[in-house]
Image 1 (cartoon, rainbow, N blue to C red):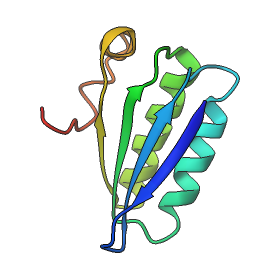
Image 2 (cartoon, rainbow, N blue to C red; image 1 turned 60 degrees about the vertical axis):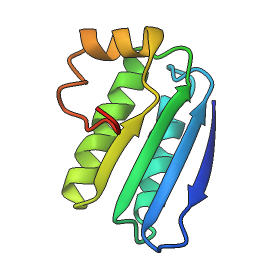
Image 3 (cartoon, rainbow, N blue to C red; image 1 turned 60 degrees about the horizontal axis):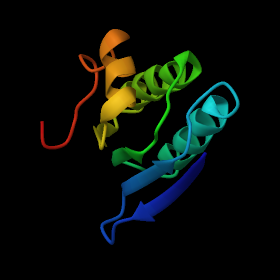
Length: 104
């Protein structure tokens, strides 16, 4: 899994383009990298899952923890690009009801 951070010219926003499987081997990496970026003065963040082909229960755990963390830190968090198998897993895990999707 790889995370590419793109920051806006407006301070306090980042887009994280996530690519690769989000599973047991790298879910902690996802959580750590995203929350560290949130700690750097972030007010708004978007996680792009367009290039994530696979998400397991560890990935679900990471997403839930990131959502919880954003609420504690009062960060406006949104998601985009949730499709296919990843969307199905999130739907079955009832995650879609607790996240904000861009364009939804």
